[in-house]
Image 1 (cartoon, rainbow, N blue to C red):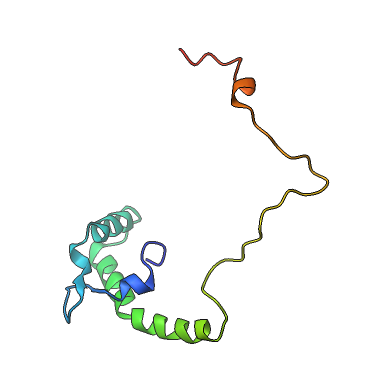
Image 2: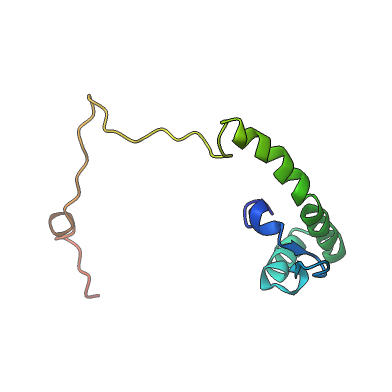
Amino acid sequence: MQQVLTDDLAKEFNWKGRKDKKPFSQLILAEVIKDAAFKRNVIRVDCENEIKKYLSYTADRLNRKRPREQAGLGHDMPNVIPSTPMDDQPELSFDFDEDFDDFDLES
């Protein structure tokens, strides 16, 4: 679920749409998730229960995340190293016209 729905968006939903929240059960995304789970031999009812649980714990996840962000520890982003050409490596270049002259694209 965390790959398809951020906590900030998940906080807007619950399964049925009660208490001024939107019904996640009516989204196409809910069907897509249930279908994908079913293909992995997960019963639809079990999948629904897991989605309900995930949505119900959104506030807890946000409350744990907020103090870390306020302390300056940043967001939950992976470590990213900026890409720079290495000094001892030649820079790669690609010339479409030159590299594909031998291919017959008509057939």
